[in-house]
Image (cartoon, rainbow, N blue to C red; front, top):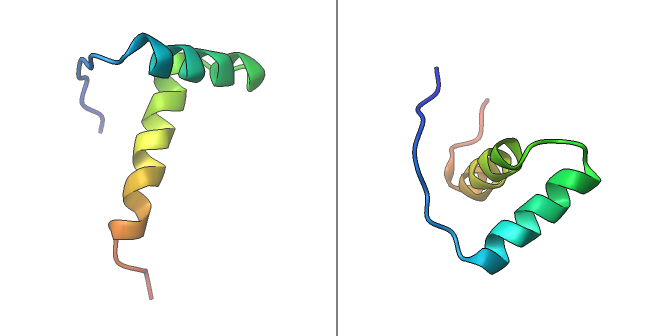
Length: 48
């Protein structure tokens, strides 16, 4: 399940995300979603 949201990003942050997306042949939304998920992963309890 996914939830669609709208974010306001500074031009600088968007350009960095766009650049990384181009380097990895992905779209900006996927890059930003992964960055957000990774930023929360240290907060999640470890499995097992």
